[in-house]
Image (cartoon, rainbow, N blue to C red; front, side, top):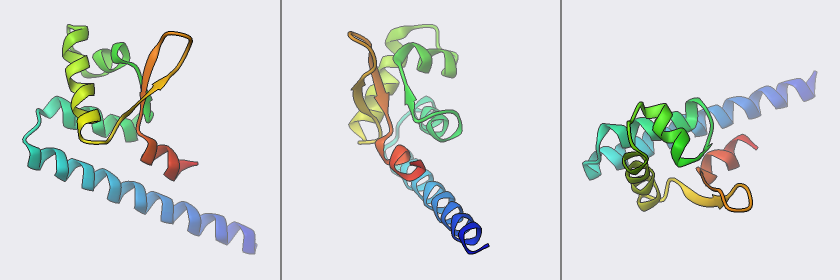
Length: 104
């Protein structure tokens, strides 16, 4: 029973830290005056997955161009929310390392 309680408390702590991180990032982005698409993609890192590609960002945001999605991703990199990672031999991906750290 003690182990279950510890796991439950750890899950609550992680959930609180994730909510706090999300709000902190949202405030940082809004204060910087970024577009609503940048804020939305940041929120999707918590709702769907903390790893994405530019084509996936394009689909998630309902954008009609790779370039538009790339600009949104670049804003999240600029604000230290996403980091570039290598997914396959030549494919680039982007990861919200702080989110991954909290859920692992």
